[in-house]
Image (cartoon, rainbow, N blue to C red):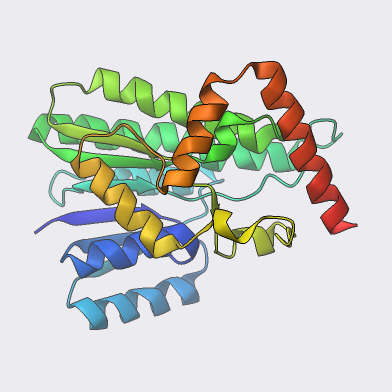
Length: 259
């Protein structure tokens, strides 16, 4: 039996991964902060797909909690075959903010914990000669919209670097870089999304299906949906001055939407 671990597995893209992995018969280790919601999702997936679902209540901004998850991922007696580093959120603070609280929390969850968990998983999987690590990044990592963009750019480079270290080991590594996805993410961040054209929105379940297909094909960077693939190529090859100008326009549209 395959066991998959998903952080932030009770909502949005994480929940879509949990559903997809359970539907193919994977047992699950789900990580989230909200114990009641975590148990409800676990019960639903276990009943729907006949799989075992283990719940880990953890706040990944707290290092002892993150280490507990790492210990579970690295437990050789109960191997994790697939790791999805998905937990994340909008930073919610500008780069000129006088407070570091939100920046520190974002860095702990979306940078340090990703390094910790992918490292533990990578070592264990390399020893076994197989496994999959998926780090959820974002197309935002290719624009310049504050700390969130910088974090996701870091995750992309981190994933590519891990793929280099694990080349030839039998372990597959992939950075998922979605565009706008219809989840709770934008609502929690206070982003209405009315300024975003309808065709640019993605369905979370289809996004995950496309990502898992890209993993099977050996892609290290997955940008599902053709229109986002085109946008990704433009952003990677456009002059940085143009990327900054476009990023400024997007930021202005978002501010006007929130006004």
